Each structure stands twice: as structure tokens, then as C-alpha cells.
Length: 151
Image 1 (cartoon, rainbow, N blue to C red):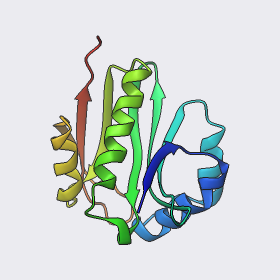
Image 2: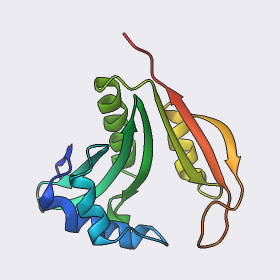
Image 3: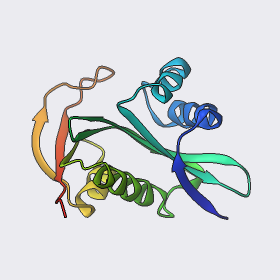
């Protein structure tokens, strides 16, 4: 299995949508994902299984005035626990650094300890809570931030 990581293009949209539907209780619509390709603030990286030409994961962020906000990250359930989420996050951090971002922030479900641990592994720190943030079940969101150092 050969996994490659690239910026999302139009041929990846359906795969991103399918993963989003299977991973999120409130997935983005196909039109919303399509519109991200034309959004100058949005940057999405996909993980593709080249043997099957299949999108197996993605991560997205909006970058505004040197600050990136991670919008979502997901990995197909059949490809978990082999480092794809880790590599997607690493790829986004590198992209943000290349684009001279100084900060990356995100919200993550309070119950999603796996994601929180992934972010902590990459230097994100907890810096707040949004009470009742998630509309589907009113779960709290943990706010996390990573400061990028400029060279």
C-alpha cells in the first residue's frame, strides 16, 4: 500500500465527501466540500491510496491573516491506526509554516481523546472550552492552539 499526500483537487471531492459522511455525525454537504476548492482561505490535504486510487483521509484549514483554523480531519475507518492522521496533521503544519502562519487553532470534541492526544503529540496545548459547542449533542469543544516559530 502506497499512501501519498497532496493538496485536494476536484477529483478528490467525492472521496472526501464519503469519508466525511462515515466519520462525522454532521458531515459537510457535497456542495460545501466543492466550494472549498474555490475558497481562497481554504487549504485541504488528502491522503490517497495510490494502489486503489482512493481518498483515505483528509485535513482542512482556513488561513486568515497568518492564523490557521483546522476545520476537520478524518481517516477512513479501514485505514486507521497506521499513521495517516499523524501524517495529515504533520503535512498541514508544514504547509502552514510554509505559508508563514504563526498560529494553528482548532476545536475538538471533549470526548475525542484520540484526537486530543494526536494534537498534543504535535505541540498543541489546551487553552479553553466552548460549552455546548456541538449542535448534534451539545457536547463541549476543547480549544487547542499551536504556535509556529518563524525561522
